[in-house]
Length: 154
Image (cartoon, rainbow, N blue to C red; front, side, top):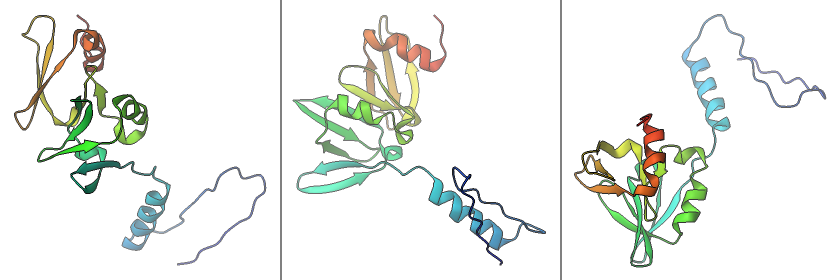
């Protein structure tokens, strides 16, 4: 493989071009490597279980909630304590890693990837049913936000 670098003072950001007669495994590997280096970094959340610290990927988090003046995070299989406040986590939700998260009440933030369905039969509230049979409730204040997220007009 031939590699060349051109220095151009007018160039604002690096540009990579691949010239090839065909797409080979070597070319695929090169493109994959370059793409990974330019991908946004994955944000991790520090979660505690007793004295043990676990770093969780947002994609593994099902539900974040507060209770007893503490904040907890729930995965499909386990629960952990967070040293963050919900408003701090909501600020983190601006990061691409949290694009599937939405706040549903003053005490709950959910990951839409783990939602099985929304029970709309209760008057004045929405019950969120997760795939693991657990549930959370959307408070009245957040119902318009959830309906907008879901594309429901009424």
